[in-house]
Length: 141
Image (cartoon, rainbow, N blue to C red; front, side):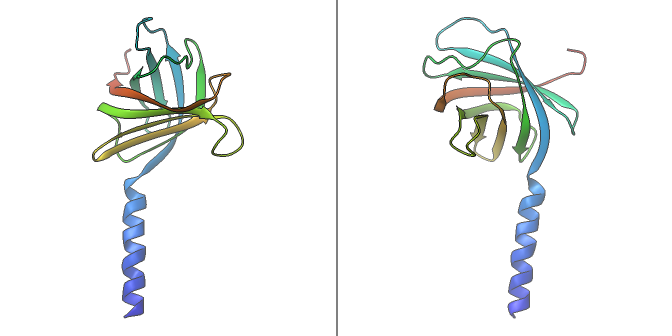
């Protein structure tokens, strides 16, 4: 009986881990209109899946993040390739590991997309809320 319970727990954990994808990524900020609230356009290159996505973030507070041609290299963790509208939280601080890192957390019911990589700001950003929109980019762009 204990073996069956242990096997069930291992199976559930394995299936949960199998649904999450992790891969290296490069994000590059692109020129964006100077409007309020601030809007940021970012090209996300997912290196293993060889896909490109445009992430548009419209912050809910005035806060300078980064601009063209700033790049950050890191890792994405997601349960499905991103597409559509998301709630976003942006951080660029040293809270998690002692080294300053840039993080974007995009969430909505049934979908999550997280990025963590090299810092893009001189200032610290803590839990900056934003509206996010993600679309795939064809290879011809």
